[in-house]
Amino acid sequence: MTSLKICGNLADRLFSRGFGVRDKKCLKLSWEEALYLCEKGILKCDFEEILDEASSHLADFDIRYLVYRDLKNRGYVLRVKEDHFQGKKSYSMSFYPLSDMDYFDPDEILNKNPPLILSIVDGDGDITYYMVEIHEPRGEYFNFPTSLNAKYYGRRYFVFEDLEQLEKSTYGRREGRFGHLSLLEARYLGERGLIHPVESSGEEIYKVYRDLRERGLIVKSGFKYGTHFRVYERSMEEHSRYLVHVIFGKEELQKVSRAVRVAHGVRKELLLAYIKEREIKYFRVSWIRP
Amino acid sequence: MTSLKICGNLADRLFSRGFGVRDKKCLKLSWEEALYLCEKGILKCDFEEILDEASSHLADFDIRYLVYRDLKNRGYVLRVKEDHFQGKKSYSMSFYPLSDMDYFDPDEILNKNPPLILSIVDGDGDITYYMVEIHEPRGEYFNFPTSLNAKYYGRRYFVFEDLEQLEKSTYGRREGRFGHLSLLEARYLGERGLIHPVESSGEEIYKVYRDLRERGLIVKSGFKYGTHFRVYERSMEEHSRYLVHVIFGKEELQKVSRAVRVAHGVRKELLLAYIKEREIKYFRVSWIRP
View 1 (cartoon, rainbow over the protein chains, first blue to last red):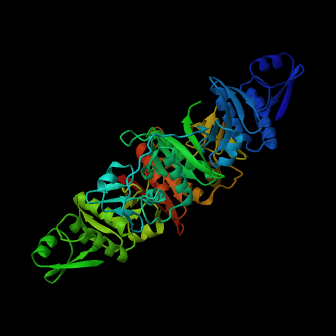
View 2 (tube, one colour):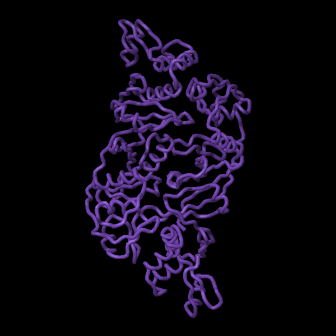
View 3 (tube, chains in turn brown, orange):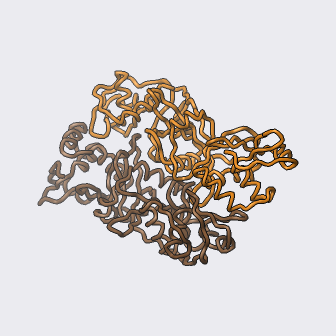
């Protein structure tokens, strides 16, 4: 990571401002630090030459540098690590520079030990920051309707009796003289013995549905928001708190960005649900201005 | 499509209210019409029996019926066609019933001759209506920067001279003593001979970028909105009018829904761009309440 070694007075001054790593009386600077100090005129240098040299050593140095200078300009003290910047201002946080062509890789993120901040340079060179945390959603709704006589019709289950039961529950929907349920709802109630025949539905999506219900959450369709679920903590009379989207592995950052934008626009929290070795991990992803 | 034939007085009354197809003195009803009239108590019948019978004849009848009755309840006069309902209220429109597990299929939609309305039943049984039209975006910006000396660094191009040129153009971005451009911008300017070496970028995405630029539109990153582009008609001092997302074939309706939601939330128009036999088709998709 080292690019440049400087010694003497300037080394002391820069060290006290959080730059570099001490090497006896001298200071070793990373490429990002060197280019930044060059850009600011604190080091005498040829900007293009350092950029060329750094890029020959570090893939994606262009992206790294744009994130580094943006955070510096926001007043952060930064330590340059192999694949991220350790930033300190009001709080300490790891910033991972990425381009908008990269992916949200849940396994990699778990290895990096969240919370962390994805720092994404888009086509315009603008930088978007997404805070990623592991989250454990919990609710307080553990009621079930009584046994329902539901019948399968291709895409949905219909119910013709006990409609008051259905109406009071958070499952399905009543339409006057009949009611209907989604495949996920029917399967879940079927597992509880509350409905008879059970048709299959997407395996992963169902597992997340069940897990959320078992955490006491009320789980309804997220279709209008373009996610799998919208989730209530206690009752459907309050606003739903979460949008939950199931991911099956690496996901394009652009798609994550779209989901974050929707959630932000409707003041809900976005959770990406990922099944890892039978355990479901929930990543809360939120748009921040660092 | 016919399910039931009724004759006599009731046939006349129902025909005058827009139901059925005349068969001499009688009236042939579609399954949707029969079940709806049954639900409303206008026909004496067993609701469940008709539903069963209809479902045995028509795949997705559950979905079709939920859309049909919703539109009827909104006051539409509907003609039942093979794969859609021809609806008439304030204006005449084709409604295509779908489930949220279905796809947005650009080839199929082109065959159906838009404008049309996708009528999508989600997991809750709620119905979302998306108007789909072919649209020809046009702008008024046809300026270029003069020749730029831009250099490639992995993910972006950097510029060190003529920064005022860059700043005044709608290409790239200036950051004090340097500027930078995206791969798409550099490639486009490269094709015009304004930049020298040109690195590749996604083929389809680039074609749409170029087409939009050639229509006089200003094309910037849509990353913050989770789409490929945001597009201005005249100048970046106004708000951008469009979000443009490139699709490569069938796209999950859920993903389209997410993009529509974002666009709606920021009052922009969503265009799905699809390359069909070298021609680029732009589908404008908007959320409506019919």
